[in-house]
Image 1 (cartoon, rainbow, N blue to C red):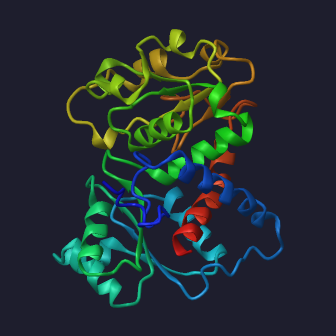
Image 2 (cartoon, rainbow, N blue to C red):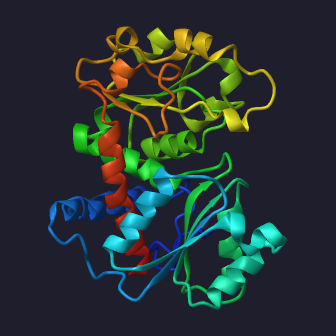
Image 3 (cartoon, helix red, strand yellow):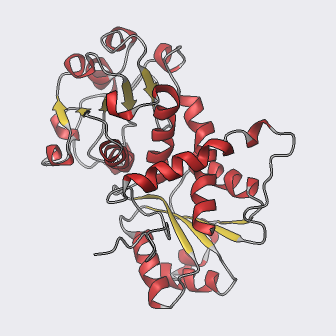
Length: 318
């Protein structure tokens, strides 16, 4: 069965999830992003690749970092960018998601960047577009429910490749709230596809999905044991807004056991890098001394994110 994200020729049509995408596509995106990192150093930070294209940012869920980097990426490619203010849009008056999409299609949209609290919303949009013969409009998932956040996963892979070069020699630890994290799912999918031989997840049992081992990871419930000799530490934000019930003790207790401190980081390899998708809860998931330390590459992740999103948009437009 053909991947719905790919054209008949195997080229990228939409970016909805990293799960099921071949290594060649992931590598092509990372390779395409490489020269885009240099655009930020130029006096004129513009390329004509998307000139005349209209990109609509449909953010039905709050986000600052993701929406801003998508907007910067599109503008650096010379696209016309429209940010839909959901709080004042017709959806708040009862209009359905697909009616909103139809109206924007009538405004000659070329690409939708969609963030939604419901898992599967971007898939629903692509099915609707295909049913109406609108294969000329592309969809990028900017985060849907607990499901996926593919461009975050890609920018994380770009960051790892930048600092470590070879995925096939690494041990990577994903730490924290795996259960509620769409970022974790995208990270794990990309890491395994790109050939990382050992992906570890480190979390309390209450913050792990059922049968998480089927994702191809090793599970650790002891932070110190799980961090031993790893090359990359990928911290996750506690998704308090998605939790129901008492899954955790107090934030102070969580930090004591699961927070990344300099003492715990010392168990990883001496050249290990520390990553975080943001926003960070300092003193809960990560200590400020680590977040601001020499091994942290958290701000470069944001910078690389612009180049990776430029790469995705340019490949879709091609």
